[in-house]
Length: 203
Image 1 (cartoon, one colour):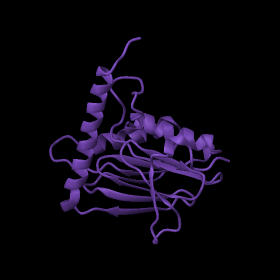
Image 2 (image 1 turned 90 degrees about the horizontal axis):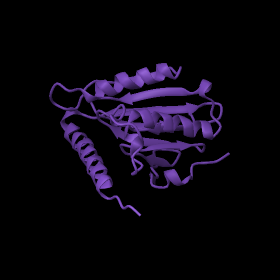
Image 3 (image 1 turned 180 degrees about the horizontal axis):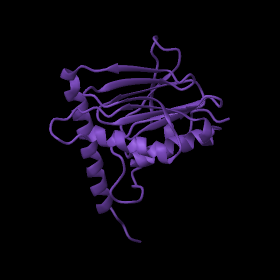
């Protein structure tokens, strides 16, 4: 059965930490990662959501990190950044697990994130939380663990073999770093989209 090294995951940063028994894959907004070899998948969430999904029998699992529920326009973008949207991130994660021997009926799902870290009336995290739970219901899936909402960003460590999750909620005074990172990512994606639309060559 295939392991973790496919082209789509070569860009994912990996590291070692003496506190953990397995190699750590660190994912960012718009990323997802799946492994048939025991790994720890790590990310930091603000208003974003990560779904941790595995098949405990096939021992294949992974995690995604998405910013928004779904794009207003249909179609994938040419930069490979579609997984910043939940609609693509969830499908991509589930499909990759199924490709590696998982069965949909056996999937174990855990949800984290959706913190209200921005000032003002707009609660992006709440919209993400509502969307992902509707998605699971439509797919006939049930979340075994849900830790969504509140006002704290979260650090997530997900063990793909056991399904264990370590969650650390970050103090409010540190929220600004997470907020700035999410805003910077959103701005970068918008700039890439505009550049992609402008850089068209007909031949």
